[in-house]
Length: 113
Image (cartoon, rainbow, N blue to C red; front, side, top):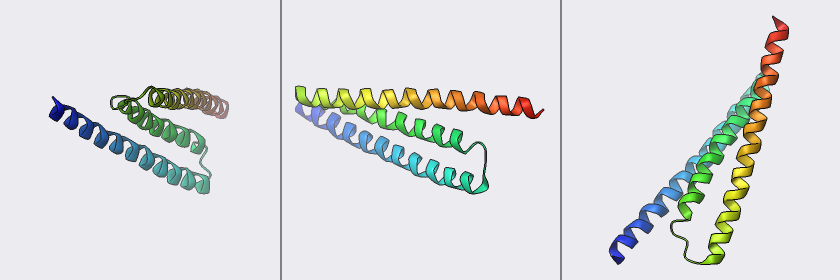
């Protein structure tokens, strides 16, 4: 049984690292794309940047959820729960911002035509 527990911990640790790395890569790529959009003065820059941040937060949130598998102490549970709550709140705020920006872009498109 200890062998299975060790394998579970190793798989979980590797998956956490992969999700964290993917989250960081998405933030970097969204930032570069946002910078290019800013230089080109694209009206969709804010929207694209918000979507990139939302996707990155989803990966980071996934890693935190996986982290709950290997938590051993109650204080660690509280820390992970607080991080999950904060990241979930940020995700909701970013999705709200995306929705508002999309409706704003729609309104602009409708007034132009």
